[in-house]
Length: 342
Image (spheres, rainbow, N blue to C red):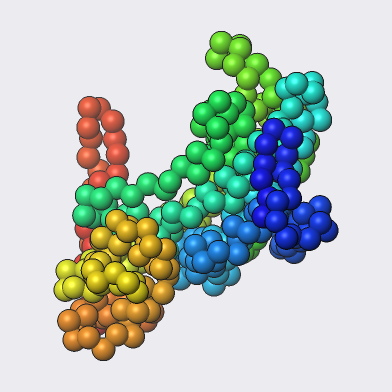
């Protein structure tokens, strides 16, 4: 065990000194050998975090791209690592009194590590499923591990609402493109070397994480990669179709009483209620798909049939779509789908 203060971390228990100094090395397919702090390792070695091993990073994209079998687990490790790397670069060009302290750096790494703990089965598909019940599930903001006096530029390292450039996106762009075998061009290592904290005149000289002007082409490539991944994977028409079918199956199961229960709690939770209890929610992974698929409960027959159709590629077919206008703006309306005649 250990504690942290403004001077960094301090050993307080029986942890070996070598463990505290060296952390643990993870061999990653994107970043190579990553050394993570013992506190991060302690979080990783918990059931709540290990649950991320069984939640697909790209949800139903795996049904389209066989290589999209990576999970939220490795992505979270990558974000943790990159957060520490960016802090080190930013500190290199700052005065001592302006540097991010060791404890602040560790808090940022923990925030990066834990930022996806709130994902449900099949990642964003779960959020869309709960939306059918008017329950808007939002991931917990793990940046609360930072103090209330955290600087804007520190938060922007993990989640940048100013310009959309942060280490979370860097990792999933790189990881998703590798697993999906989609070629990308932007060089995150170069961007990392040319990031600095600087006052922004248009924002009242508030300090933000900024990048050299000569990196504009590299940044442009980064956003092209984002659009490319959305077009070819995240919003692929077949992915959207399968997601609708999966939500239909979950909803059918929920309506006939498919429940989740944990030891010590007599209450049984429907899928649409599981998020109301953190202990119950922490047991939900992509296995829900197979729990329904392999169930022998006759009430789940219709739900099972929809999931079987996904596996047999008997997908819904488009019968029509239309565009509506609202206040002079065009937007895509809901697509009507029907089951194929087979």
